[in-house]
Length: 155
Image (cartoon, rainbow, N blue to C red; front, side, top):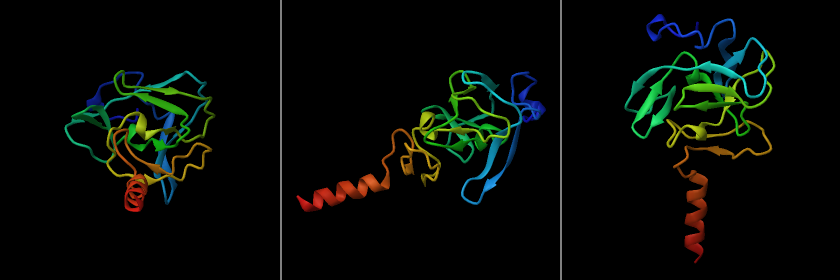
């Protein structure tokens, strides 16, 4: 199991035989890879973590003032604008959106769970639908702010 024993022994928690947290590259840092194939719609894992009141690196938003701190598994899911997994923070489940071959990194869309990110960043996912700058659901990209400022100056 990837979680410490203090989290309990739920057999649906992420298992070391199914996943690993490994280095990806200098831009992304670490990510989660699968050791086995998952089909679209499969439940990959039930997730857990410490509930904290603040946004931190490796937290995921549970509600407007609660975040789940998971430095063992979900905190290392990478971002893509075309994700291969979906994280339901109400049910605390991770589900495959696409077929995921063994040896593949797991990618979620951070805007799926977060109103505000710990840190916004330029996206390098390379997908056809890449948004370029990654923010939470309720945040505005600095590029949009600059465009609005430029429009206001010209009027």
